[in-house]
Picture 1 (tube, rainbow, N blue to C red):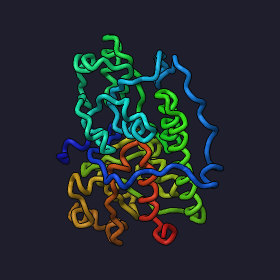
Picture 2: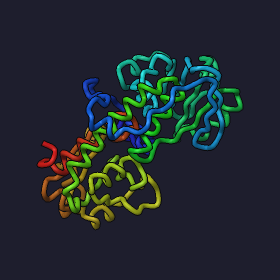
Picture 3: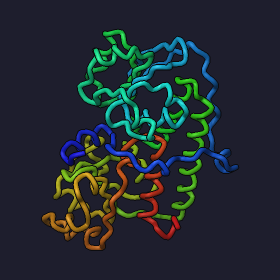
Picture 4: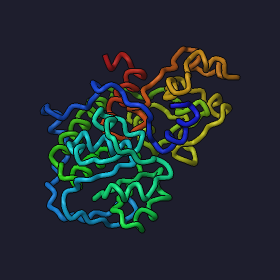
Amino acid sequence: MKPRTLVPILLALVAGLAIACGDSVPAASTPEATAAASAPTPPATFPITASDQEGKPLTLAKQPRAIISFSPGVTEILFAIGAGPQVIAADQFSDYPAEAKALKQRVKYTSPDVESALSLNPDLVIMSRAQRTSVERFRSAGLPVFYTPEADSLDAIMEDVRMWGHLTGHAAEADQVANGMRARIEAVKVKVAPVAEGPRAFYELSDSLFSAGDKTFIGSILTLLKAKNVASGAATDFPQLTAEAVISRDPQVIFLADASSAGQSLETLRKRPGWTSISAVKDGKVYPVDPNTGNRPGPRIVLALEEIGRLLYPERFR
């Protein structure tokens, strides 16, 4: 993916490339995981009527067998909970797991085409924030659209996992995935419990200085890890900061989600005017992070939480 095309995708909370298949999220299997789990989601009895994020009701007469997903995060969730075989088409960025990447039918992530969707005769169309302006057009064409903007926190991601388990007839599998996520999140909380105050941190989504505010799932990761997000208090969820703002807030740790897409590194940051005065740059605490886990609201978000935790507190994550 070219660096300049990455920015709008990140702003829609989507990463471009998948990580290795070995980085899967295991299901809960320990007593601690069981204790941390929420009450099981009841098995679905179709027909189901559910309201989406805008309060629009959608009735599924039977278990959906022909799903179109315009959301890479939801696509990952569907495959993780066993609903992958029900997905007949997905957007071009839905590339994880391998089965999702192998899907032959593709829909456009931005400016989606109604006729292409109609030709697939879906019984469920999942649209996210990037397709917001197309939702009513798809509904007017008679397509069964469920609009679901990306989750804004770790808890919301787990709620989404359970919701999609219920709507696709995979409640038990979804509970298992969500419980596994919860167990790993609780384990991280234990590791950072002794930390009184974490360092100031800057999470760089792109070399044009887009970042993530507190009311995002990336921001919730930093908050859980007790880091002080230098993008905190921004007017938007994914603000574009100025270089002056970053320099003045003096992050002690910088995470580069654009290391691979835009070639950013400690060396390139040292070449930015004024950045050598930043504590993170002076101390060499500039770390590339995997955007495929950190920028996508799916089950692998716990991997991003653990990765950032290890970088912030290596002595606590050995």
